[in-house]
Length: 161
Image (cartoon, rainbow, N blue to C red; front, side, top):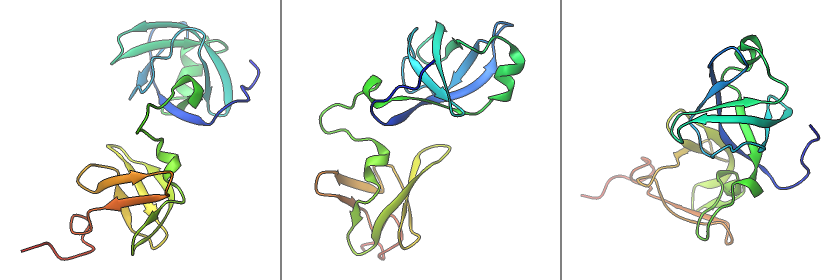
């Protein structure tokens, strides 16, 4: 399959355990429907979803070019990436990678987003780690390039009495 040349890549899930003998597998942490025909990148190679079964919470997919349990086993845990054009964001939403370069007042600049086991984590230029959860991040303005955090929650200021 040719590499799609549009948009940025976003995470649609991870390759899970094989399901059957035909190269089908469960998608871990699904973040997209992965309908039949969707172009996905796994471990740097592009594939097309050739079948999709299961539920939205536990999808089972098969990719063109992967026909055996062994092929799936080798890719276990790999990210499944899709074009952000196949997973558009709504007004007021943003992609985690859009936060790289945003400023956090009196702390630093977001230098990268770390994919954590329960949530993404913003790494700031001063080494501060900010979990991307509502208790820590109060507001994001991607256009202005700012992220507002709860300094007390992060241990940057003493808690209010």
